[in-house]
Length: 499
Image (cartoon, helix red, strand yellow):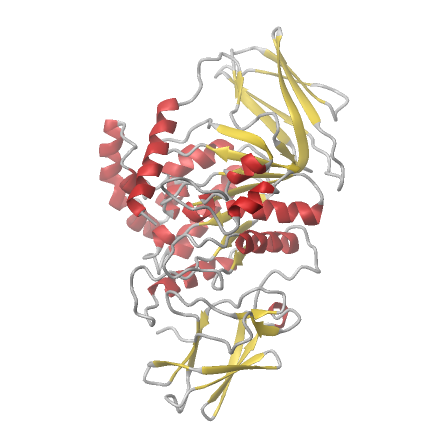
């Protein structure tokens, strides 16, 4: 990948978005995310909001309600209404309409569906589209074929325009489209495969909102007030950027892409905050490459970001299902380097937060490509987590083998895994012995171990370690692994030491 061309591409996109600005030419308008073709979240109140002339009366009619809702534009020029939304019925393909009547005019929201709505966000691996983008990507594995068959009228795709702002924005630019070969080809591959799998299994309409922006750091997606409230996070993720933000804001210059994409709050203000009144099912998140050096604080940072989102959306502990970063060498050919492994470890610690889940990608990475092309398994694994944890489909296997304990007998180590994660058995995806197990003795020196599977356990041995005291699995920067359960879900990296 030509990273210079990649950053030029993103910089150009940001400049275009900034030049367009918000549409303030109309006296009366609805929020930009509220459009025909959208999916409305089932079983939650649907909020409609916008701006107009103070005192103006609005009559809002939804075709599934018997009585209209009447509201008025408040003295500050804003209006808000809530409509109760019924449960989606599997297999029901009816379209709906909403009429917003003001003065002598009527805004019609047409071709609406009631189903499940997910916000899919993060950096470039979430933004990576199914079909090629000149100067950036070649698309994903089998992208042209996948796009060609992407005819799903009950799936709707929404792209939030990329941008950065120094203050929270009330509105955003976005576009809802029916899922077809053209719209899907230009959409996030991970989000598309996630939504398609949900649609296959739930048989209800699925709405996907892509609010991703490449090269961004986690702190850019966080409400800066949440970071400020944590002394440690403020010291590491706010204070170092304070002067730079002031200088750039004074010049009204948000096109310095390589620096501003790391600044706290700027993506949140532009791309997340304007969505907070929208009822949703949850979030999917694929980010981390820009925070790879935050091997001590990423879990704390990401938890703070999520806490801010949940507070802003006011819908309880919304699900947050995320992708653990794939193997990548970072131009370091040392096969024992483990700084990126320590970052993955930070990501795994997010699982302690309620209503979260992590998709493993250790088997589909490309050590020399920060944007691995095989995105279909990533989206499907996120969907399996959602199907099991949000939609409570108990027959879904959604996680690969997870470490439980190890026992030492002489110089042989037996590794056990949580029974809930082994599915119908542990195996390898290539029929070979499991790779990337290491053992160490009291000298803290790790040596690659021979591994074999025996009754859902892994037996380890290496002649270099006579008295093993610690085990590591896939705890290096770029190990493309083969250990999985029979359901095809890869084992999670782990280590038993804290060295």
